[in-house]
Every structure is written in C-alpha cells, then in structure tokens.
Amino acid sequence: MLTLFADNLTRFPGMIHSTINLSAFPTDYAGAVEKWSHEVDRLSAVQKSFPLGDLPNNNLIDHPLITQTAWLGKLNAPKVLVLIAGTHGIEGFAGSAVQIDFLMRLKEQQWSWGEDIAALLIHALTPWGYAWYRRCDENGVDLNRNFVDFSQLPVNPGFTDLQPYLLGSDQQLRETAFTAYKKQYGREQFELAVSGGQYIDPLAPFYGGVQPNHGHRVIKSLFEQYQLARRQLAVIDVHTGLGPYGYGEVISDHPLGGDGFKTAKNWYGAAVTVPEQGSSSSVPKNGLLDYAWHRIMQGNSCFITLEFGTLGTASLFEVLLNDHGFWAKTPMQQLKQIRTDAGWQQQWQTVREAMLAHFCPADPIWRESVIFRSRQVLQQALTGLS
Image (cartoon, rainbow, N blue to C red; front, side):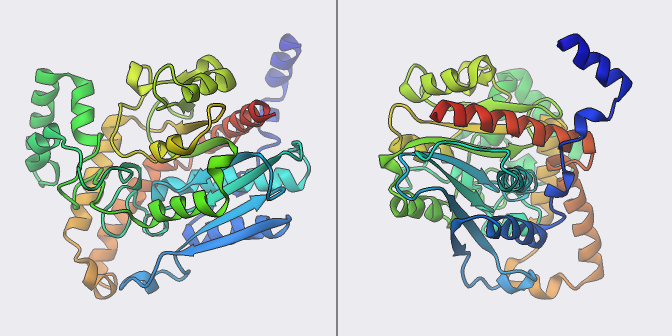
C-alpha cells in the first residue's frame, strides 16, 4: 500500500493536496469572524460572544472586537474536545483556518463521534491583537503569560539584563548584547530571558500584565458556564511561529509524571514534546493558559499546544522586537488620529506584513501542512476521548 501511495504521488504530484481547502484561511480579522460565523450557523450549535469592551480605539476596526464560542453536541456530554484559536492574536489566522476546516468537514459529515462527546470552539481569544496583526492585546499583555498569581508576580532577572537593548534602534548593539548573553549563559537561558515572561515592561514582548485580561476572563467564564471541571477534556490550543517550518509540534506543559502528562503521551504518542525536558522548540514559561486548564482537569484529560513552525526563533524575536518598537512610539489614546497619517500607515504596513509573513506564511504548502496536521491531531484527540 505504501508503494502504491508513493507511485501515485509520483504520477499525480498534486493529489495529496486534493482534500485541503485553503479558503479556510481568512484574509483579515473581520473575514475570520465572517467565515467562522457562517460555518457555525450551518450547524446546530450554542453560540456565545464576549465583546472586548468599550475601548477608546475599539471602533477603529470595521468589525466589533469579540471572542466567539460555539458548543457542538449535547450540553450534558461528559467529554469535550476544546479547540482554541487566537490566544496570540495574529496566530489566529492559522487557528481560525483549523477551526473553519473542522466545521466545514463536520458539516460534510467527515467527522463523527459518540453522543457522549461535545466540542467547544473558542475563536479569537485575543481579538484586538488579531485585528491589528499583533500577538498581544491593546495593553501590550501577552495572554499566554497572564495566568499567574498577581499578588506575587514572577521575576525574570535575565529580562532585566537584556531590557535596555530590546527596543533600541541600534540593531548591531542588540545583536552584540544577545550574543554575549548566549555565550555566558547558553541559548536556553537566553530564550527564557527574552520569552519566558516578564511583568515590568508593557511595551516589550512577552509582558504578562498585572491583572486578568479579556482572554483570561473569557476562559474563567467558560469554565463556570459549561462546568468544564466536571468533564473529561481534550484541549488543543493552536499556535504558530516556533519550530521546524510547516511542522505541527504537539507540546505538553503538564507536570512530568502526572496524569495529564501520561494522558498526552497516551493519546498523541512519541510525537509529544516537553519544554521541561528540553525536547521542545519551546522553553518553559510563566503564566501559560495551559496552567489554568491544568488546575480544573480530571486525571484522564490533557491540554496540548499545537505549534506550527515557521521561520525560526531568531526571526521570531527580530520581528516581534520591530513590532513592539513601532508600537512603543504610537500613543494608544491618539491612535484614531495617528492611523490616518500616511507615514504611520506606511510603517505599519511594513511591520504587519513582516508579522504576517512570520506567523502565517502565504506559502500554500505551509498552509496545507497546517490543515493536514491539525486533522491528524484532532483525530487523535477524539480517539483518546472515545
């Protein structure tokens, strides 16, 4: 069978892509909301919307900024597949595509599961960042560093060492500082210093904030509304930007040896990587969304990050630093006036194109890989719940 498959690929090199519809990828935030809503409306689902709130700059986007959710299946189902998109705003482009593809295939009856399983889709968890092509929210908060004890914020001494070099315009000076830090402490400690989470500079990347933000509150509300602590859960949070190009890495941040860790290994097999063990493209981090889910999970549940690799860690840091450097010079309260300036528009176009190129490459092969791999992982999750 494998030989026949290989022969067919040789003769018909396009056939492997025949079932993958790249129209699931939206062109912008408003398009994502429209596509997602259209597919959900074709199914029997309980829908909820969580508006971002009355922000001074909320009306600058043509579409209201919201997080959307859909519950598919029986409300009392004891098992739930949870699929999350847009924890990091701009990464929602791929996350939306995964959910839209899932919904389209569900309508076409290409997915099926028992009546004891329901699905909860959480779409655009950081809607402001999604709409403005950023990872963070309107206050510079990285939702995936926001789940901490705010009475005792984590300390990241490495970030303090590197902070003076992060947003400066002297790229050579920054590269020299980075190289010296890596030489002294090693690459892993360098990545921890930059991306492990910091709680002192809202203008810099990976800022965790000092209070729960919009996405944090939405998650806690869903826990209560759907009594998720009483159910068996398979949670998949879709991210992009780390790891080998086009590969969907299954990352587990469950404590080693715990029930969640064992469940992840059982369901997803040897492909599971673990930051704590050094086997992942990601290093251990503070304040992850994962940790909130870990606290409510039963022993036979697990949370995984499905991370699609793009252009490498060096590119990730450089693109993010340029993004944050640009926005650091944009007073948020004056954004409505500033965004009409031609010079600002030109700079923003350059920054957002670089962000989009890193977090959602236009390459159709990369996009096909996202859809194909997500189908594999979703099937593994449903099989695990079954």
